[in-house]
Amino acid sequence: MRWLITGANGQLGQSMSRLLTSHGEEFHALSSSELDISDEAAVNNVLSAIKPDVVVNAAAYTAVDKAESEHDSAYKVNETGPALLASWCAGNTAHFIHVSTDYVFSGEGRIAWKETDAVDPQSVYGASKLAGEQAVFKICPEAIILRTAWVFSEYRNNFVKTMVKLAQQRDQLSVVADQIGCPTYAGDIARAIYSLMQQREKKGKVEVKGLYHFAGDIAVSWWAFAREIHQQALAVGLIERCPTLGAIPSSEYPTPATRPVFSVLDCSKVVAAGVEPSNWKAGLQAVLESIKAEGVR
Ligand SMILES: NC(=O)c1ccc[n+]([C@@H]2O[C@H](COP(=O)([O-])OP(=O)(O)OC[C@H]3O[C@@H](n4cnc5c(N)ncnc54)[C@H](OP(=O)(O)O)[C@@H]3O)[C@@H](O)[C@H]2O)c1
Image 1 (cartoon, rainbow, N blue to C red):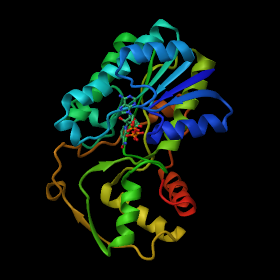
Image 2: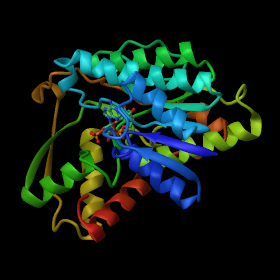
Image 3: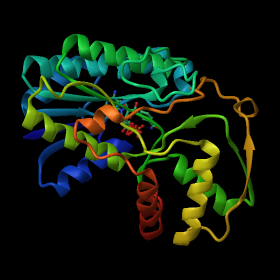
Image 4: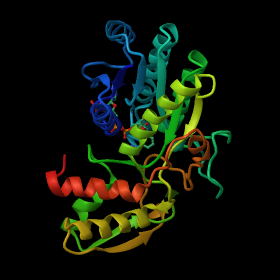
């Protein structure tokens, strides 16, 4: 199997490269400057030169708030790009794995979202990711799309790094406590993608295709996530004391994009397909130990 990873410098892109390296797989990991997934000629030329058996699209426009004022840019990367990749894969019998988001849901209600639940994105980012899902399945019905949530990792800027930095600088912080979701370690998403591909090779692409939800095993608020980050950061010696953590409602932290209030994903389908659930607290420990050993990357 020859793998191709797009968006190679992102959280998932770097995690995918690390995982494929550890498994001794042949792969090409291309950054946004090496392959712009929204450029049709580039997609066709680069993919036809590499001839991958599996394409994992880890590229995305992920600036949720900025997307509200950059509609076209968000759709170019989140809809056009995946459509071009899906089209090449469909025409060249390559496996296509795309990644989407919990933000396709409204966030109303209190029951974990299943793959079959109705979508109703509340932001431009969520709508552009949904448009990407729909374009991919229209062009390449045998694709796999993994919806995930609240991604953190050793790489790039993310909530974990922000909370560690703030705790190093301040004694008191306020964090939103009325949005509930599932933190997800990008290393676990990479593992889930690899595992789904192994299942697909075993069971065939009729059995293993379509939408899967994959997110961390325990649902928390951003406030509870921050508290866990601080407790673990203290334990590994990244901070000297846990800051006092004020719990505030979303209304006290206004953002341009509306976020789902309840975006817990039901991951039973992916687990039934043979993928290990994501223990995000273990992932968090791995990230904090890596920051401690190597500093912030
Ligand atoms: N982050 C989250 O909390 C979250 C939550 C739910 C779902 N997801 C989904 O999970 C997936 C991975 O997210 P992530 O956190 O790894 O994202 P990320 O760290 O923001 O990485 C995205 C990568 O995409 C690249 N990119 C942007 N436009 C591109 C283009 N036109 N062509 C090629 N590459 C392009 C970026 O390039 P540069 O390096 O040049 O910036 C970046 O390396 C995405 O599909 C995202 O929508 C993320």
